[in-house]
Image 1 (cartoon, one colour):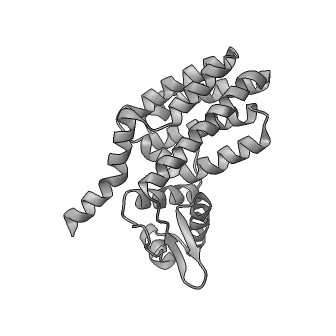
Image 2 (cartoon, helix red, strand yellow):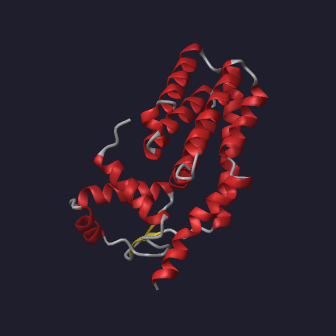
Length: 224
């Protein structure tokens, strides 16, 4: 999936935020960012607007745009809710999915398993996003799908960050196939459980996630 220049810029800004190059509470200087990335203010403004939607930055009237402050506890709580929403979508999809939707899900699965896609965590993320979108659609519950997409958007940079962990892309792809088979065969409870486990941060994955989220703090201390 080809990303637009605005999307690439948004991804770069996300990386700066989650890796600590832009710190929580820091004001975003649009002119400085435009110079840094060699673009005009327009794509910077468009990218920042998308970051506002995702909750990564906040706009304070008459003061400017600032990197949002979000605690690790808040992130974990949001992932817990995301797991429940995804699980419910999977359960309903296993019951309600139509033939065309199943084929769309199969195609999304195969794109996720493409070796070239799996070699780039960012490329994989966007194909992974389409896989999950297919499940939301197949739930045939518009309210649930809208809630899942909204929260997924807020968690996007952190879900992308998860994919940077060693072997996470390969493991994610294997989990996708289990989820697909459960939905294809109408196994509602399995689909629900597999999706919850796929999203929920637990065990070793939790430790890896905490390490990645906090690593910028260590680098900041090392350079101070």
